[in-house]
Image 1: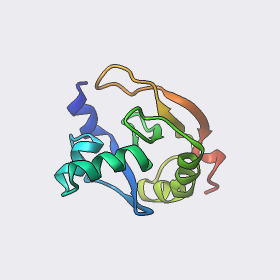
Image 2 (image 1 turned 90 degrees about the vertical axis):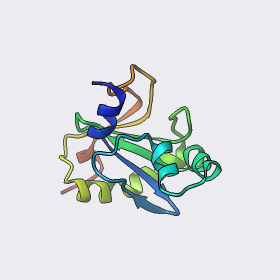
Image 3 (image 1 turned 60 degrees about the vertical axis):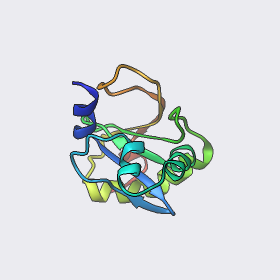
Image 4 (image 1 turned 120 degrees about the vertical axis):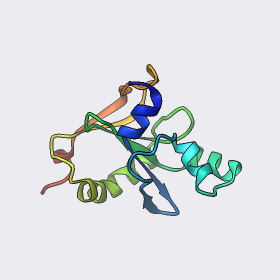
Length: 128
């Protein structure tokens, strides 16, 4: 699968102004491209990428969350992610076996990149 196909198959999300933002299904844009195409200036989009929680639900169902151009994690981003996890589970009807990963190790474009840190499964944090 190439990068655009991967983008179309995954679901991206952001937290902007303390609200979960879910771009449209099937978008082939990166997080940055989506921000720019939705009337965020280049400078504002860069600030969101560098400072705000964002992530994806991969085509294989795994969740990745991160911050910054290098897609890293920190204590603040971890805390924010676990605050929105119940909302993600509800909106996407995520199965309890879904693996949660923080940060990503850059891999081949179009493939699911491995997490820097694995946290376990959704069921370890959410009781349905």
